Length: 191
Image (cartoon, rainbow, N blue to C red):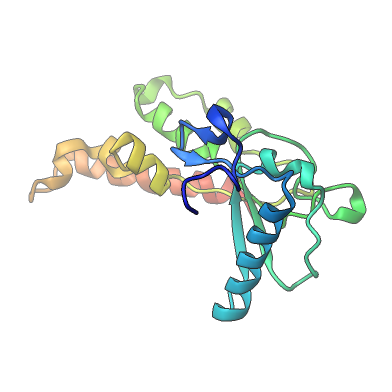
């Protein structure tokens, strides 16, 4: 990668400001060769058994994934809500094994900014539900969340009390809510 746009879209179309990343132009044959050879290298050199793809909707023109079943686990990480991405190719899907529930951490952060009494449990359940026959990997917080918002789930729950040496009601409440959040994610969120 020399900074030119031989692998990416040119101009502003080739840059995603939100993630501060260049966007590959999947319509170029050399881009596909480059990316697929990289995947193959990681499989052969290090024995990787899975990959997580972010921004899957920009890759959809490529068509369904054609991995040998059981050879590698393929996870989609995107928030478009596009149906059938995690269904088998034979069933009209795109062949991803799992969907990474990327909207889940954002939902928790938003809820934690409101008082507990204002939490809408039915919204929580609707947000965490998965589509039929589309397995998900759900989680309460991510590295992206901590990097962009500069706060972890524990920081939202306990604030500065987290750093004090004494146990307090705030810390006890924060730990209890942290456990409940993880339980909700485990029970409602995924496979």
